[in-house]
Length: 135
Image 1: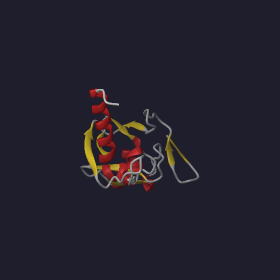
Image 2 (image 1 turned 135 degrees about the vertical axis):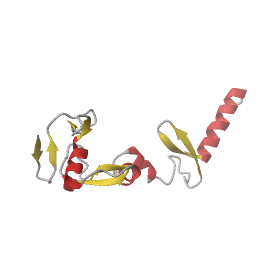
Image 3 (image 1 turned 90 degrees about the vertical axis):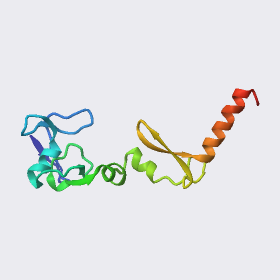
Image 4 (image 1 turned 60 degrees about the vertical axis):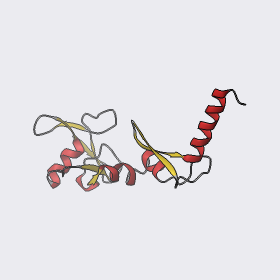
């Protein structure tokens, strides 16, 4: 249930989830990601705490040569060239030009977020002035 492409990708043609990853029932009967099954068949079990990264960035690809075992951080930030986490991790200045070398780290429901101290201070000051009725 796959198709070979000119770039070497072997695309999964079976069921896919909403993110474009191939889905298949694994050897235990559980619904699993097709690329994870392909990796296990080619290289053995996936080590605890590791994820499978598509070197080709094609979520439907099940070619074991295009798959590698990495940590979640490597997969998302260091190798996820187009996702927001990767793009934001490379930023050195906020949108107003202040250095992010000195910033607050805030925990959000999406993970850690860097907050520019100068911009935050300006927002707090504006909020307090508005609340006090100062213009």
